[in-house]
Amino acid sequence: MKKITLICFGKLKIPGLSETFAEYQKRLARYTTFEVIELKPLKVEEKSPAARERVCLKEAQMVLDQFDPKKANSSGTQTLWIFDETGTPLKTSDWAKRFAQIEQKHGGELTLVIGGSLGLHESLIKKTQHAPHLAVSFGPQTFSHELTRVVLVEQLYRVLSLLAGHPYHNEG
Image (cartoon, rainbow, N blue to C red; front, top):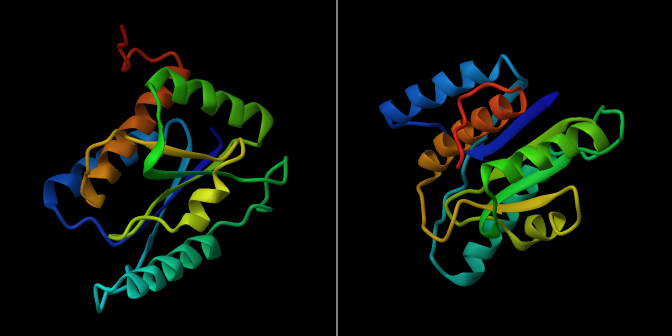
């Protein structure tokens, strides 16, 4: 994979998680350019559905301002994966197959999005309904956004090491 960009909200504040994230980020450097864009989360001043919708929509626009589908790669498109509980759960080997396709057919640039505290707006989810874009789930359980970032970066390392033939991944 040529480049992976992670767009997320807030900073990692939990010491053990931030150190673990940094370790996997360092490991990723052997396989790809990995960039993290931390957006400032919006405050949810009131809990009404209309207020929550406005915040979610504004955060979606913040993400879209960072995601440029015509950004410089050979195919003229960037691949977008969002992480949402309604997404598709994938085995590591399935991630690897999709990464290989992105590399071969779509220029090897992948943008990953973890939403804010209210999740992701449906406008972002709709963008992932056509290949090579995808909504991915880590399963039906709920994780904190900070823990999701650590699980994601470990999974990225696992997938890229698998594609490189490194024995880190041990499936089966």
